[in-house]
Each structure stands twice: as structure tokens, then as C-alpha cells.
Image (cartoon, rainbow, N blue to C red; front, top):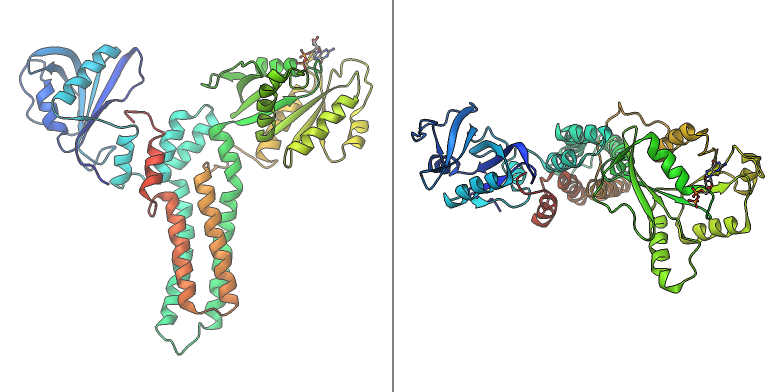
Amino acid sequence: MIDNDTISAISTAQGTGAIGIVRISGKDAFMIGEKILRHRSGKPIKTWPERQVRLGLVVHAGKKILDEVVFFAFKEPKSYTGEDLLEIQAHGGIENLKLILDATLEAGARLAEPGEFTKRAFLSGRLDLTQAEAVIDLINAQTELAHRAAINQLSGELSLVLQEIEEKILHILVSIEASLDYPEEEIPSLEREKALETIRLARSQIRTLISQAKKGRILQETATIVLAGRPNVGKSSLLNALLNEERAIVTPIPGTTRDFVTETINLQGLPLRLVDTAGLREIDDPIEKEGVNRSWDLIKKADLILFIIDSAIGVSNEDQAFIEEINQNVQQPKILFILNKSDLPPKISPDELSKLYPGEKILNLSTLTGKGIEELKISLRSELMGEDFSPEHPILVTRLRHKKALEETEEILNQVENQIKNGVSEDLITIDLRDAIDTLGEITGRSVNADVIEAIFSQFCVGK
Ligand code: GDP
């Protein structure tokens, strides 16, 4: 799987900038450097002092000057990729960078695939898989909290906890294997108790990680909040009120479609995608049915539904039918009721609404005066991240891939616990314990298959 040819790519964004970077990594990096770089005097470059900034010229075919640049040499293994690496900082015009890239390719480099620099860092053991994933997350982070989660992961915090869990499982494995050497003896009961206690501790660490997974996903991928309700209850007014207060995030997801308006905001570090399903109930036209279906798909996938009621009108039959439809269509819907237009004389109070929908959270607000918007923001945060969420506590698990592997490991440990309790033969138990270690190792990439690795690195851009 390890390619040892030399790769090259433009590592800065595709656009005009003051500076643009071309990177070359692999065993021929400096040989390619000798072909395309010159001292400013025009003399060839013979030595590549490590990590020193140097000024020079990029030339094409040994003579035509392309640009005046600075460059750095990193010798293996002390580089991002763990290989010899040459970084050229040029003037940031896209044509300029393409010409320099072409020069590196003509000199013998191959155009890097998406994420190939980071993949090489993984394959050379410079980063584990969670850290490589953190690099993608860091690049894509849209809020400070998402950025912090990525930095924690990049610095190896998740790997550290996983290592602690693995050591616990390994400890049980070693003590059981030791008892296998004396087949005439059973696992002493003290050892058995110790093993069970260690399993409990490992499982509790795994549980803590799993419980963070949903919050981690929200940080990395944004939470979807659907604004639902009859026409004229104030859905788009609420969307605008939140947009006016919070910074909008520009996302590649198209904003306004025929079926709904989508805006993404940064709510104190949480990236929230707000979707106004205007029109969901107004459509009779069968041709528009497709749009309605799409709105329902969104409602089904929503992390939270804000169901908005006009308090000056009260809960109409149509409102009730709509809520019933949500309950029928959505598995365990998470609904936050909003009684809007609280500036007008109310037809229904929060207490009365609470009697109709016991146990549901209800907020009174007015998008017109802004009263209640602050409470709504606090509620959004606690509904999505839990009451005890604090930005000071790092979230370590941000990916479904991690969560699945943790759940599988937990399942195997449950099995092992039962086996120990039921006196199942030790060699069967050791097989399961090894299985648990391997499953855990999928997260860091120690025991992961090539397809998973390909899938992860294909999410990167070229040049990273
Ligand atoms: P949507 O159809 O649910 O998106 O509702 P809109 O946001 O378009 O609002 C419908 C009407 O209600 C508009 O005339 C708004 O100005 C008005 N409206 C929205 N929120 C409030 C509010 O809090 N108080 C009052 N008095 N009017 C509101």
C-alpha cells in the first residue's frame, strides 16, 4: 500500500492570493528541487540545509525563470509526511502556481491524489487515523468549538483515551493467558473479580466516549433545526430574528430552494442549520408533492423541530393535525414548542399548551419585540448538547466511524463479562479479547482495512 514515488501539488486554495504553496514529497523531492530551483545568482542548488528559509528562483527546463520564491527543505523523517519534503512559497497567482506545479511534474513528480500528503503522514506513523481525520475537521471547522474539537483530536487526546482502554483489555488478556499456561488450574477467583472490575472500568470509558458522539457530529457537521408550523405563525420571522443576532455561516449547501429556505448560523460556537419549511402545509398541487416529500425527509432527519404556534390564535385543528403527522412520521421526534407573537393578547398560555402536550418543552416569545429569543438560544444549546455541556470539556468523538467501533467493542466486552461469569473456557475468552483490541484499533487505524483508509483520505482536497 505504501507508494514511494514522489508527489507534488498546489497546497493553497485555488484562487488568487499573496502567497501560494507548492509541496513536493518523496524520495526524489530534492532531486526535483535541483532541477527546478536556482540560487538568485542563477547557480544550481547543491545542498539542502534542513528547515532553513532560502530565497531562490524557479526555472523551467533549466533556464526560463518562472518566479522568485522562498523554499524550505524538510528531511525524512522530520517532515509532515515523514518523507523528504520540499515546500516552495511562490507568488499566489493561480497561473503562476500551475506553471511551477507543471515544472515539478516535468522534473519527475507525480500529481498528488486528494489527501495524499496526510495519507503518507499516516502510513509513515507520523499521525494515527484519528489525527488524520482531525486534519480534515480542522480544515472544515466552521466555528470555534468545532475548531477546538479538531485540535484536541489532532493533538492525540482521543488516541490517548483509546490507549488507556486498550491497556485495560490487554491487562485482562495477559492475566488470562498466564493462567492458560497452567491448564490444571482454573482462573483464580481473585483474578476473575479483577478482570470483571477492569471490564467495567473500560466499558465506562467507552460509554463516556459514545455519549459524546452526537455532540461531536453536531460540531463537525452542523445540527439541523427545522422550523415547522402553519402559514403566518412567524417561521420566517423567527429565522430572520436568529440570523440578525448570530453570525451566518456561508455553506456550500444551497440556501434557498423552491421548497425551503436554509441558513446556517454560528450560535456561540455551535453550527446550526436552520430550515424554514414554508409551504409544507399549503401545497395541494400534486406536482409539488415532491417538494413536500423532501420537506418531510428533512423533518425526519432534524436534530430538533421548532414547532411554532401563533399564541394570538391558539392551537388550531390544523396545528394539532400537523403535530400528529409529525408524531406519526418521525421516530421519537424532538420538538420544542414556540408560542410566538407574545406581544399580542394571547388565546393560549404556555400552561394550557402544556396540558395539551404534557412533557414537551415550551417557550413563549415574540419575534417582533425580541422577547424570549435569548431564552430560545439557551434552550437550543441545551437541547442539542445537553444541560451539562461546557466548551471547557473537550469532545473527543466526532465521527460515526468511531462511534460504531466503540459500540462494537462494548458489545464484545459485554460478551466477555458473561463468559467470565459463566466459566467459559479461557481460550475462547482470549479470542474475544483480541477481537475487542482489534475493533478498538480500527479507530486509530492500527487494524483498519485499506478501503476504510481510502474512504477517509478521499475526503481531503488535493495538496493536503
Ligand atoms: P410564516 O408564514 O410562518 O413564515 O410567518 P411570517 O414570519 O411570514 O409572519 C407572518 C406575519 O406575522 C407577518 O406579518 C409578521 O410580521 C407577523 N409576525 C411574526 N412574528 C410576530 C410577532 O412576534 N408578533 C407580531 N405581532 N407579529 C408577528
